[in-house]
Length: 113
Image (tube, rainbow, N blue to C red):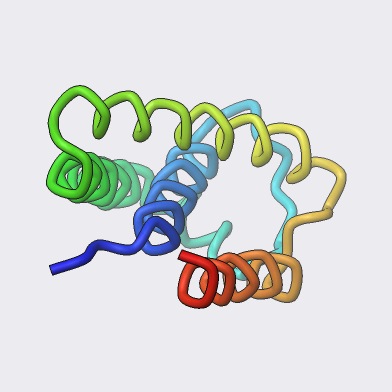
């Protein structure tokens, strides 16, 4: 069974965005519509974020092995964390941008690799 890099990346993005939404320093911007719920249910959001993070780490290790999987997971996490922290306050993260990025990534993954 082939685990897709795009799927692992999407799980990492969602899990970090959930953690970012529970931060006290986050400026609440309703770009995805779930920010209010995440702020009100911080413990549930952290639990879901942790579960998604563990699932994505497990899928990454399943796909590439222990060493490469942990390394790839950490690079993807650092990349998406930087993007969320930089782009969310500028209101450049929304459904349209996210859909374009992940659909193009999926198309590249399916047809080029």
